Image (cartoon, rainbow over all chains, first blue to last red; front, side, top):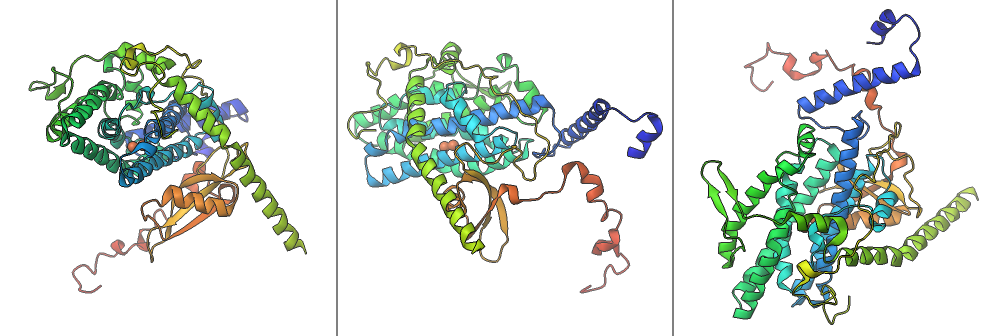
Length: 336
Length: 146
Ligand SMILES: [Fe+2]
Ligand SMILES: [Fe+2]
């Protein structure tokens, strides 16, 4: 290829021309990878918009996992038994892990961990709107596991095949861990549902409150989701928001029967013509409000994250100081 | 996180929380705040220019041996101030479910990698050398134990 260029271009190409040439070749390579449904790796050439989209999506996803620890972590001390405490701690620890896998994936695109942390704490980054709703009762631990983790799984399984290698690999690891999250939530609800009438009512109330927000986790309706098309062309997204939402409703409508509870939606039906599940209208105004920082718990969630970050500063500093001291001592010993 | 009272319950009445909650703005949520950074050269999967954060915690690559007899395989990366902490963090992050019997941690900057732009030429030599594969030799087909 280089030899051909020398023949057709008489003068030495300028730096700009060389860059253009590299970009053209990069784009061709990228397009071929997309057409083959293969994977892009960190050091490959990629369009700036692809990098930007991924950075936004992966970092927002990471922030969601980190903020998502809070509604459940707040219940660890009040879990009804030692076993439930242990389970809840394991789940919250998993969510921390998910956040870390995803931050690592985002770092491969050129953002530092510090930049992302700062953006989150400064309130400049978005995360899933679902975590700005309060977890009012123990039954919410069940509803969150069953509905929220359930919706997350629906969203995340296709992301295991995302065209960006590090993102897909992080999602594979995450999906392996998620299934226990949904099952433990289902069990909490089942136990309450088979308990006293008050307990059953508590379970139903939690399902009623988390149903619509969990459906909105799939994002705005397809007509109102301008970036979805491009994400699908880039093999990041595999199914549309409405498609995934419809699938989720279909699964929940069966599972809720086993729970002996109901979904707070009288308009759920299977459309024989489209072969899709349909549901009642959702309040997209509320969704936009919560996303824009005006939900019930936005301020509280950010404040808690900030606090945790500040409270942990001395630990990070102490560990770094200890490491520096150790390495200085080692160098001295080696020199002696 | 006091064991008494529900920290999830906002100060006002909880029942009306969903719609009546105070509208607190948490500042700008402009989602285009994050601009991509173009970085060209780097040795590892992580292409950030500096792998050590503000806190002095460098980036480590983690390799996990899933069971005896198998190789260590790259599991992911993490930040830690030194090797001992990197190992502990790796245990907590990548082996919460018996995924490993042994862990290696390597400072990300210590890894040298082949240049992705040189894909073609760097890996050229095995191309066209089919005779290095058993499938090249077809005349012996049907001969047993060969
Ligand atoms: Fe998660
Ligand atoms: Fe989860």
